[in-house]
Image 1 (spheres, one colour):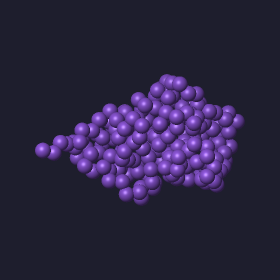
Image 2 (image 1 turned 135 degrees about the vertical axis):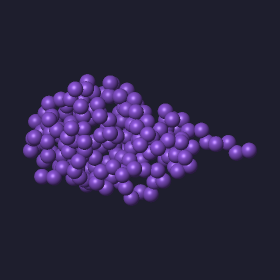
Image 3 (image 1 turned 30 degrees about the horizontal axis):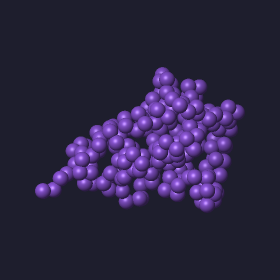
Image 4 (image 1 turned 90 degrees about the vertical axis):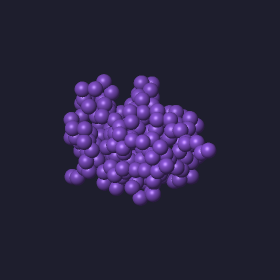
Length: 204
């Protein structure tokens, strides 16, 4: 008798990646990005495959809602413990510290903050920065999220500088600093605009 694989629904998390990586279960997101799902295995993560998805028995939209809720709970615990890093002159925010994210096993979900409405709602206690009218967002890697002020030209310049800096970093240096190659996979060099809770490509 065959036993069905039991999926822990509380362990399903959501991540953002490029849309050309042949994942079995994913959803288009924005630009060349897609949303995909993983199962938390305590010390590791496993991609949710088609068989897993079928066994869960819910629509992709409902799975997305569940996975965002689960990811928010995990990230919220970190958010309570770690202050954001701010560069006041350039209106740049880098949420959390990379070493702390890696230590807590959430490095593949750093950019998933973009999917959590509370971080971009100025009426929420979790809002990343209430002084910004609209947020600029860059996600050069799954492990690196940059937030800027759309009304500050210096913010845009600094964000582009950081994106280029990450492009040019040597992989061996990244590895020696404890960043796993899988966690440093590039996502996008595009800057996005978060306006009224909706992410869109930023063009200026």
